[in-house]
Image (cartoon, rainbow, N blue to C red; front, side, top):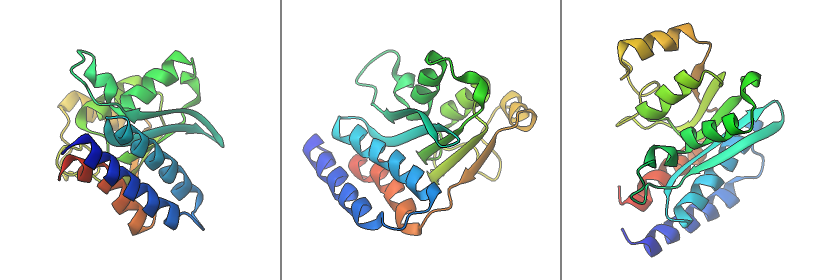
Length: 180
């Protein structure tokens, strides 16, 4: 799909989010903010995933999926990993905050979250059954050592309690600009 088409889809989704926002619960507000980050990522040529790390009422870091653009460090392009890197660079590792993300983390991001051991809870807007590794799978797609880490660490993964329309927008911003 051409960048102009991707941007038009992102703008359509942003309009739908604007129309939906009144009366959002606190969790819907956070997923909505992550969705705006994902929309901006698409508008800037990346992929539609947004992540926010929050402690109490304070947003610590935000990140969108910037796309690889042929870079050798493309793994940092993933929103969740980028947010973890920013958290580490800010020296905020001791707080065990929550991460809100528009899409269920892929296996690589899940592994990074487990290794970092700095997040207490991952709250996702939409599931991604094709490549996700925790919530969408009956048997998590993790090697035994990571599955062991998941049970040893106090990290929980769960779907956000949001309206179905917001969950659909979180899915749409990732899949529609990619022609899926």
